[in-house]
Image (cartoon, rainbow, N blue to C red; front, side):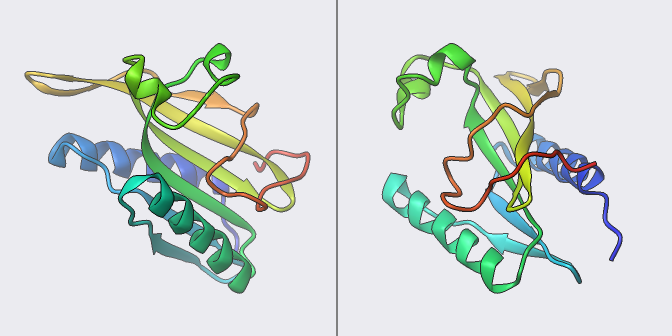
Amino acid sequence: MALDIRQLIFQVLEIGKENLARDGYLTPVAFLVTPQDVLLVEVRFQGQEEKQAAYQAVVAAARQHNALAVVTLNDAYYARKDQAEDYYPGKLAAEGASECICAVVSGPDFAPWSVSVPYERTKEGIRFGKEEESSDIQVGLLPDWAAGSTRPS
């Protein structure tokens, strides 16, 4: 199966933007990229404990299906690099950080990278900012999954 992971992450991000604009919220999802297919995995949780367990289940499913990569899509708070040092769950919300949609691709054979789109809620609806790519990231939601040195193309 020939798959352009870069193209996939941007398609996933566009669908996320459409869903957020239409529904006012975004349901987190993960896509497992296997040698044969792309599998959708629902990520359901309430609270930090369930969130960690849900993403551990994504890693387990990725391993079970011999995934080459995992693409996650989440609604998050936008963090600057200087905010990451003393991060704790809830910090960015407490500090009034901007919201964003974040799509991350990670895999056992390459360094993770992300595309995020900041947004703000207005009376007219959701106003999206400019997409930002980053290859200098840590994937805290997928422990023991990503490692490596090259970015997918």
